[in-house]
Image 1 (tube, rainbow, N blue to C red):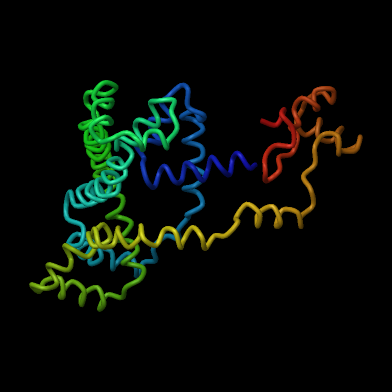
Image 2: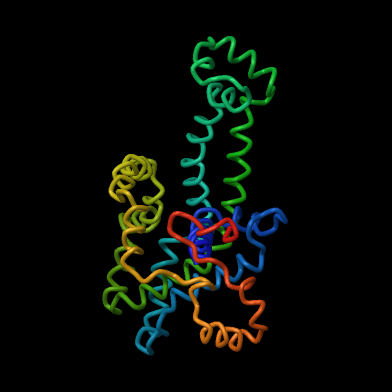
Length: 281
């Protein structure tokens, strides 16, 4: 269960942040999860977000809602916005991790303090020996990822526009949709419609989010300890050895297997801090 939960959360994170990476992980034969498993988890996640069908009244608002969303998200907008946001997020990180100090520490079996004693000229000379393209590698990586991600988000634009239109049809009355549309027709409203969603990818917003990250992480506290404490208050999971003879017989019947095979079928329970035994890995 813990592995499934971890895989589900990882798949959700990958889907939200990098569908390309999630797809390529599924295509890689050495990846932990097969394409079928990724598809299954994606289906499970999608099933968590079931929505009620639009009412007849909401259906009548849908054309007006689509008109509003069309002004906020014109053709090709989402791909450009998300591509720019990915570039703004990744380029500083890649620049930092491609700095000579980081690269040399990863390429040489020497202590970090020893790397720090090297002068800039010495570092540059060693870098040129080990990686003649080190000054272009980070840009190449970022350019590939952002261009691929831009294409992915462009493909997501249609479903995103449709979902937003339905959400607006649910949340806003016809008169409110008319007011929004009328505002978007004004010079200021036109600019706002074009910029409203792009503001979420603005460097000012991104910087504020990154600055808030330490506070967000510290706010979680010792999450592992809290989880372990919460699990300790619940009845323990049970393994094969914990089952009675009657339970073992019934389990074999339910699984349609021989009772003798149950010890190999029933895995030891996992704990929050890892599997109960090496066999549970």
